[in-house]
Length: 319
Image 1: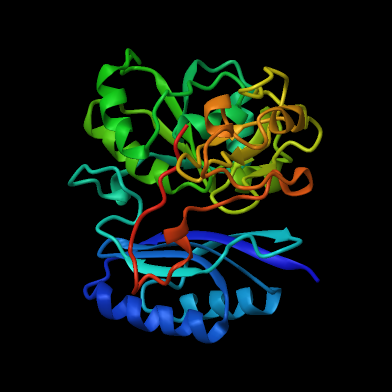
Image 2: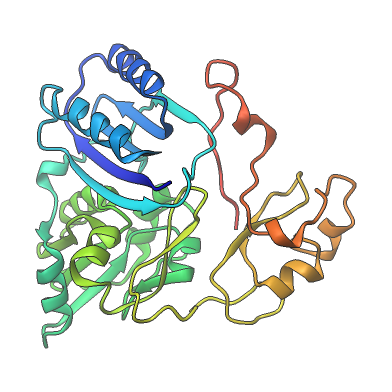
């Protein structure tokens, strides 16, 4: 059986996010889908998995909501539903940068995938910024991109203040699906950069429209797949196993349940430390039993399996 995974966002004022969330969650539960949906005063952001029929029903539901008629959905096929459960909750920001006064309507110019590729293949002078966390860009990125060494999106404002990017430079920026660029492009313009451009629909849209040309490695995604191909003509790993140093692009959660670190690992590395990130973790009394056949299946800390109403915590991926 085939499934679909959808990724989407829409910046649109929601005056009563709690009420909006309650109705949204009820619809999702009735539809019996899994994934994550974040709702705030500034809009809607989510990624869900289910059958094509379920995903189409959800798209129609969102399009029926006042102000969300033009919400764009990026859709991918999947062999399984890559989410353990459904989360639908209210957040202060639907993508957290912790800077007030960033109106996405004041952001950079959206470049279509074809315009993005044309710019890359031209002789124009520009600087390209990967607006993702460092563990994401580690396994895949566009040729020539600056890859900030930050662990969270809300670290980008500080990184920008410390950067030496000339303000007269043409700026290109990209992220997975586009939402992080919506805010970061506004921030760059507020701080003095004028020619700010963002990849419309992000890496996932570019992969479909331009076959991932000029992208190296794979794209990290926040679900059980962990990475997906972008440029199918170039699938060579660009990252390296943290244990063996050999080329690899698979992530694994440390089998020490007190650690649970997510890191790039090869099959040989997984075997060496029995699914752990270090010899110390391998010797922990809290180590999960190692099964080579399922070594790369994502694991989560215990609280991620409880319903939101029972226990609310955010997932933090450590590097």
